[in-house]
Length: 92
Image (cartoon, rainbow, N blue to C red; front, side, top):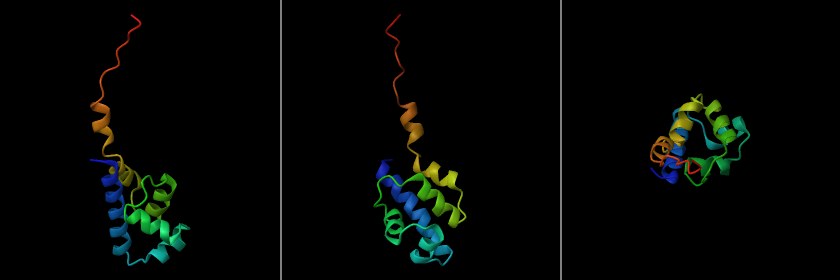
């Protein structure tokens, strides 16, 4: 899964949770002190690398498990780690 798709997944989760709680972007903006435009951009996957602190504040306001959302964000990480070639020590 490419990074852009991961960001779309996070944005979708945040938007779904906001709508479940009947919150507008403006209300969430006031709760988190994050601009309405930034929230909209995150929800729509327009922010390529959202800052962790912004995600944390959004998750906190929406009563979401921040760690779970971050795991969604880095779903690609295990594939990356296991797909690496082993380091060869050439000094021997």
